[in-house]
Image (cartoon, rainbow, N blue to C red; front, side, top):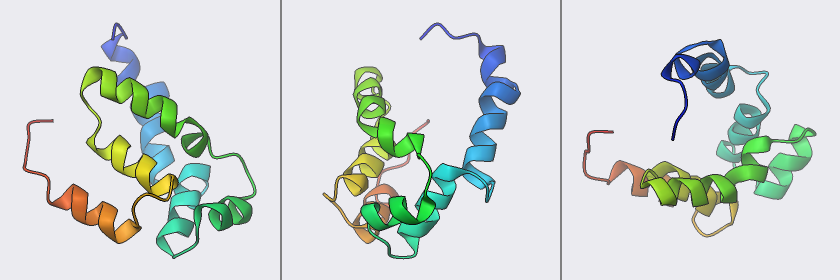
Length: 102
């Protein structure tokens, strides 16, 4: 999409992604952990007590992902956030996808 590949490989790209996914201080990870422990989206948001930009931007990210044909995980995450699938259904859907070079 025109980004400089060096940006992704640096701290502002990959570093931020790794921190978001793995740090116990990440709002998005904390929110996801609450979901994984069985809280609803509303309950997880209340317990997290901070804005989780991943939740707020999920629909816009899904639109962008669809436009570029890279949507499987984004579509499933958005479906969970919208209450269209359960976490168990989401895991099953992702694990049953045929392997692809991604």
